[in-house]
Image 1 (tube, rainbow, N blue to C red):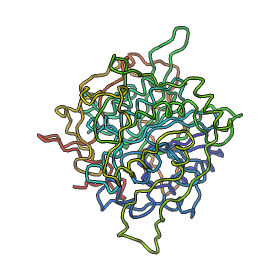
Image 2: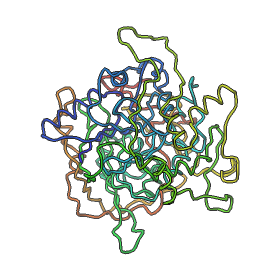
Image 3: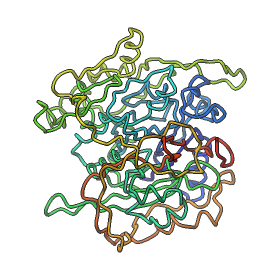
Image 4: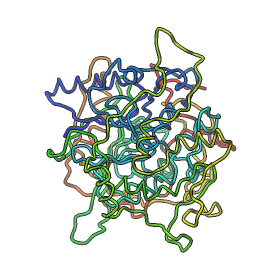
Length: 530
């Protein structure tokens, strides 16, 4: 099965689909699935634009609204996760995933689905330690703080993903797993993005939560975006079971959708031809969602997930065969995800723009149906109800939840923040802040350069509107991707790299101010915002 993987989308669906169709015609092939690694920008109208954490001058409607209104139809099944430039009010309607338009599926805060026998997992947002242990409490109208914290990864999502036992084929995250740069051509990466140097050398570039998931899930493929550079890596995991070959993960990060940028890659993944060409629920994931429904925290209070430390009556919420069979019976042995998209807000009309339209906070019937079907709580509806009633909701009131007195899994110390500035990003003060380096990961031997054996397809020829210049396209990453897959990586990380997220361009003097990223995404040329 051929899968097109795209980095940061930024609402440029027309250009992405145009590029895929060009490649299909050029190579006489057919792409079966498109995966987008965040910053999707599912903006329906002017109110949604006001829910994106970007300066007003960078708010542009782009082309998603055409697919939402039905003016256009996505030519290929599209699955995406959220990033840090999103219409958060729209994605909040679908905390467990759902259709944002016909044939375009959002994976929710975290999720797992299956398509033609390929198991695909993902986690939305970016990592910030000061919000990691909070609940999903944000709602429109957002404050200057909650418009950013709304897309920050939470520990409950990581906890749920760590209950999974079955093998994972593909996993998506917006920010990179911390430390993954040690398993690729680090020298070449820093040549292209020299402002990463301090964070790479300090091992604070990337998400510690994503790194923990990478070590735990060990998927065959891991795709990311966020840092606006194409980068490949090959991680050989430690062998956990005697008599079995160790697992390995092929990592690929891609750029943003702009001309002359490496934003799209086509890969071939083994699939089950007997499986239907329809997106399907994942039984194990549904079982975990049901098992963890009482661990819900919809407040800004911080708390830790239950663990086997003598403080909790239960810490294992993994699925049993009985749980999975019960859900399968309830579904009538039909795992197909229903095609139940429905518009919940008026769509943008270019002939009659409504610049004064306010952000909306609505309940999505897809989520209502999903929660009723599986007996779980609609997070968005409950947050809205709490807002109307002026209260907060915390389902985790027994000893299964962590105490707010417990130390955070990741430190919020900001003393080690770097002062790198990413010129390829839009500056949004106070968005990207406190990051720490409290726990170091194990770095591969510097004497050994891993052989990047990732046989991803090369996509040099693009339509004129998105053409990649030969001098840019043929350098660095493509050389990595073309190497043979025979060699092994030594010195793999032995413990989940518990560190914090990515390069987030901080102003590192005294009081730490993190500079937001992605200015070039919103303008035709790269320029600093402020």
